[in-house]
Image 1 (cartoon, rainbow, N blue to C red):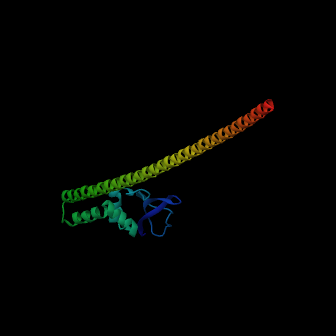
Image 2: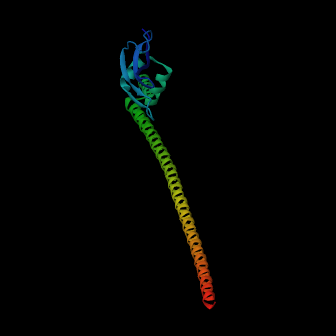
Length: 204
């Protein structure tokens, strides 16, 4: 029986979640499997891979063939390296202690790279948030300035209307005073004429 190490899809639409399984090559992709070796979650950055390395190495030594995607995942987690080192131990090229030391050193280096990537992602996300906050502040300041300008324009308009009303009122008062003065002058003139006429009659 030919055995494949491959991904079995789970999760929901648009958010896949995979099991890493050892299955008969003739079985359907999401069908029966011989053993679950781990999980792979590509929905986060960096992706989360949980894998039983020793069991996976045992399957490889027993002849299981990984698919291309599964091979990339196994290589990322160090399974292929550990299988290679195990082969060297079997051939006598390495001792188990040397193989374990090499694998530990590789894991430390890989862990450092992953940590650096996570730090870089966190920094880039912080930069994006800071830029978004600055843009939002700029928009808010522009909005506040626009409101202030609108208020200033309304105040200026109200003052102009008030000044026009005052000017109109003053003009109306001045006109009224002129009319009153003219009427007073006319009345005085008539009174003078009446007095003169009375005096003339008296003189006759």
